[in-house]
Amino acid sequence: MTISHFIYNFTISNITSLKFIVDQQVEDIEMPENLKLNTFLDEFHSDCPHPECNFGFYGFAFGQSPFPVPQPIQDALIKNADKGAYAAVPGIPELRHAISKYNRHYFKMDIAPERIYVGPGTKELVFNLLEVLHGTVILPTPAWLGYLPQIRFLKKNYHMLPTRANKKISPVDLRKLALRLQDRQKILILNNPHNPTGLLYDRLELEEIADVCREQNITVISDEIYALTTYDFSRFVSMGKIYPEGTFVTNGLSKSHAAGGYRLGYVIFPQHTIELREQFKKILATEYTAVSTPIQHAAVAGFEISKELDDYFVATRNIHQMMGDYTYHALGAIDGVKTTKPDATFYLLADFNAFADDLHKIHITTSQKLSESLIVHPYHTAIVGGDSLVLERTDFSARIAYVDYDGVLVYQKYLQNRPKSSSERTEFVRNNAPKIVAGIDMIAEFFNNLKRDNIAKLETKKSSLVATD
Image (cartoon, rainbow, N blue to C red):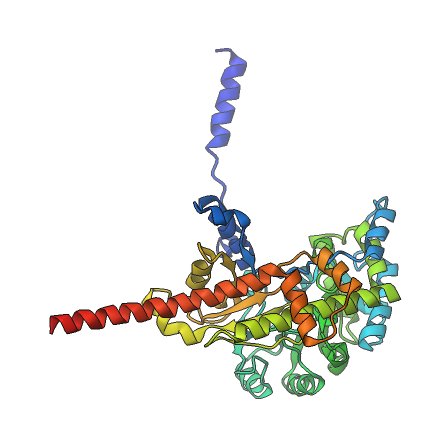
């Protein structure tokens, strides 16, 4: 062996034996539930021996708008692909001005561009806000699965605020909780329209919550990413309009423009926050400098006011509503299942707790085990269970996302022949979203089989007792 070979082998053996130590803070973070489910589904496909597994699964788990990205955004991205320079940290001026006009047009809010900061998606911006704001976080439950991991990662103090039967924040409960908290500042995360229930807070409900926030010095992070999916858009009111002095509003391209992969969101700061905006700017500059410049220029086209985009929003929200109405009625037709009736988004919350006794008899004791039981053969149905939604692990509720269809094809068919009557709308879903229809049938079959098998076991037990006597 030559000296050079000896040195090479010695170096390699030492490199391969190195042990890297991961920070305990990272060790304590769990993989986000949606990504864990992705991993589970991949393993399921490779392990399932049945030929039926080849088709995949009925996808009620993933919340991504299936529609095409509006053409003006696509064209603007191509046109601006040469923009290679770093952008200003808060966002390019053209985009901040476009977002200002967009909010004036759709949400009736006059927001100076200086109060608008752009980031790589609202998820990152919520994280940045939680970094910069001191105080205890109030998290209403059920909640979007992304909030709690961020709160824990930042080691923030937090308290859950369970909602009542209507799944909305009770101002009375909010006041009681706030009075118990010692921090000078409390931070309420308000998601409106709401993921996972699909519910919308109306003006009066927001005003009652705002009254408590003013009284108890509660800052609000209002995640309004689903605003433009509100089925009856005239009903939507931003918390930034109701409580402008204390609300950070986040929104973006992901849901209304079906452009989650563009990773562009924005935050509107409350009034009179010049010093705070400077502190926030330091965080953005430190963490990611600025959002991709070509993406920002493409987003300008997405936030411009035009008939083409208005027509797009109307069509896509009408399709979401048709799919939501069908899912709501079809799940509600299963004896024992209760669901929220969505006003917006592409989700609803299904409550399967009426089957708790039957589930316990076959050793399904958590919502995670229910999710796992539904995905295996022969049901092939993916849902997001209640423990991922910051509910108790034993709560057999689940988020149902009704977007498992070819959005490009459905969008075209809707424009060609818009359903008018209730029967036409139902027929449209049956013809164009067969996996939604079949997936709900599978959920029904799962619970019907569960009851039937438990009844059969009970009858067998009774027979054996009679025979013994």
